[in-house]
Length: 166
Image (cartoon, rainbow, N blue to C red; front, side):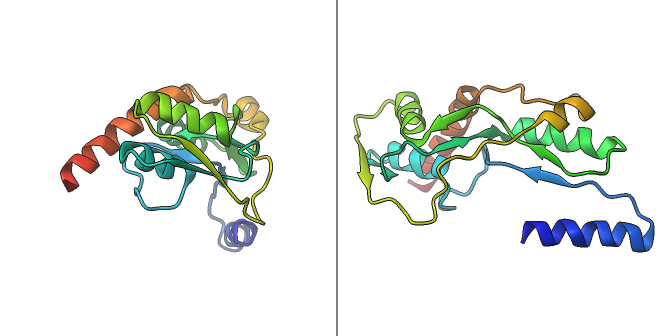
């Protein structure tokens, strides 16, 4: 998968003498996401907007870090305009439990729905948090948007999508 793609990219650079950049992109969300992509952000927002219960797998104590799409775009532009050739992690290192994140979405959408826990999936990592030290030191890049800003804009976008469908 991802590591093979990196290896092929660097092999191509070496073989043909072209410049390449490798970004390791972490959980990104924002407007224009597909509402049925199966990601936790779109799942929670769509469930909440429809007045459905938000489904959390397991106890919801597993953590995730969420990056707003504007920050990703800024990071990619900075990386591409630079001359750094090693892989760079682009993500937001702020961690939230899935349970906390569900409450954040619920608070923004303001519907009277519940959060329910379903059995945990077997392959769900307990922690995901990018180390963006290299992005900070080499590129001078770090996320500027708060997760809450991103949630608010993404909820607004999905409200429009749902209105268009109805």
